[in-house]
Image (cartoon, rainbow, N blue to C red; front, side, top):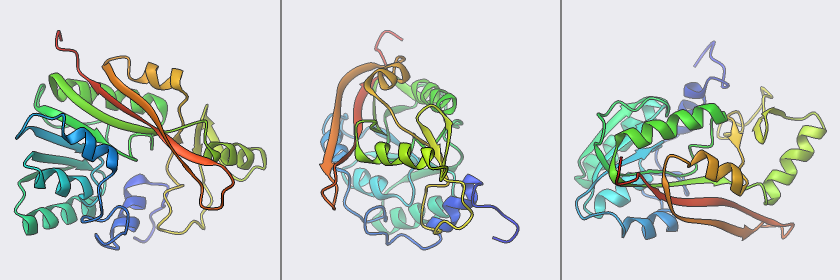
Length: 241
């Protein structure tokens, strides 16, 4: 993509997804996140589910295979195209939209459930709030949301704070980091904002919803230097809306 900067989110994700759908963790046929597998059991059979930031369809394929009707948003046209191709191969019905997360083009009260894994935190906090407002709007009353955010208690956050202090990356607002160096590997997503949450911040972000479950999913780093992890939140749009 000549004359285009990777700091443009759409360009960055195109550089990542143009490599196809075979990524070992995030490819179309990669194993789903265990939290998604557990959460799927709480959705009504045959429900309509939106994957917000669907990439190349990893969770669309899994949930569609479970019998749910599937829709997805991704800012990358290649991501939506590859998801459509994978769904066609698996005979899964899929409604795809190329869009950023702050604009959801479906009508009010459309979906039984929405998920966003490893995605919604790639925004400034104000944009996260706008996105969650859109999610609430398109969920039916009582509809479910599964979402995750990087955790401030982990090794990753500590290392980011050290890199900010060393002048290597920018903290563009509290606990939101961007690596603006031009020589990043094109498969690296550090050019995007990464917003990290403590529990108070997360509960405030989710104030439009009823929290069903909130937990830290932590794991030991490969080098044994500390724990890495994220918050996993299961919430619903209140029935009284």
